[in-house]
Image (cartoon, rainbow, N blue to C red):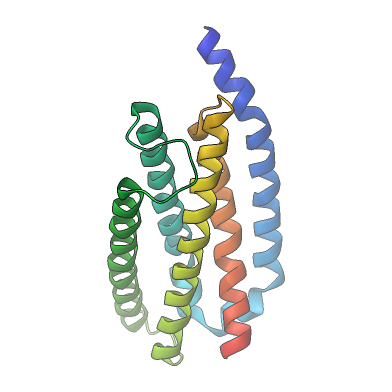
Length: 183
C-alpha cells in the first residue's frame, strides 16, 4: 500500500502538468488549422508522428530506468556503451518507422485522392522534425532520468506521462515552424 501512495504522490503533479501541455497542444493545432488544411498529407500523418516520437521516448525512459536500477548504467551524466546502444537502436527504429509511415501516408493519400504537395519537401520536413525531436528527447530524457534517479524518484512515474504530452506539443510545433520556414 505504501508503494501505491508513492506512485500517486509522484504522478499527481506530472499528470496535472501533462494535462496543461495537452491544452497547449490543442490550442496550437487549433490556431494553425489553415496551415495543416493546406497540406493535407501532414494532417493525415500527424497523429502517427505524435505516437511515434512518444512511443520511442517511452521506450528510452524505460530502458534507462531499468539500466539504472540493475546497475548497468551509472547514475552519472556521461557517455557509456549502454547509452550508445540505446541511441543507435532507437534512432534506427525511428527512421525505419518514419519510412514506413511516410510510405503508408502517401499510399493512403493517393488512394483517397488527397492533394500531394511537393513530396520531397514534405519528406524533408518530416525527417527534420523527427530527428530534431529525437535528439532533444534523447538528451533531455537521459539527463532527467539520471537526476530523478539520484533524488530517489522513479523516472518512469515522472517522465512517461510527461513525454507523451511533450511529444504531442512539440511535434506540431516543429512541423509548423519548418513548414513556415520552407514552404
